[in-house]
Structure formats: C-alpha cells, structure tokens
Length: 79
Image (tube, rainbow, N blue to C red; front, side, top):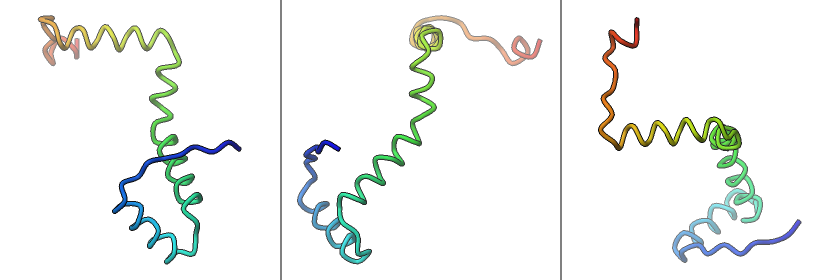
C-alpha cells in the first residue's frame, strides 16, 4: 500500500492524537476508516457520474435551472 501525506491543522492533529490515544488506535487506522466512510457515502454519486447518459441529463437539468426555462406545474407533472 502506498502512502500519502495529508496536511491537517495543528489543533485538529492534536485533538486526533488525543482521541487515538484514548481509543488505543493509531491515527492511520482512524483516517483509513474516515476515508472509507466518505467513499461509501458518495458511492451513488460516483455510480451516476460513471454513466455518460446521466452526466448529460445532469448537465441539461443544471442548464434549465440556471437558464430561463419555465418549469412545469404540479398539475402538469401529475398528468
């Protein structure tokens, strides 16, 4: 496994060291767990962005929201 240097503000680093000490874990384990949780929370986004047709739909939707495209009323959506 390769390593990566991460810059953490000194005060946060110190707090992390205290927490790691209290939990009798090393900082590497804690950071690995946090990265895994972050990736898991964003997996759906990664899945959507890996499908070109969804990227096009998202771009079209953003263009409609930022442009002057008139939206549909609730009645139009129901019908």
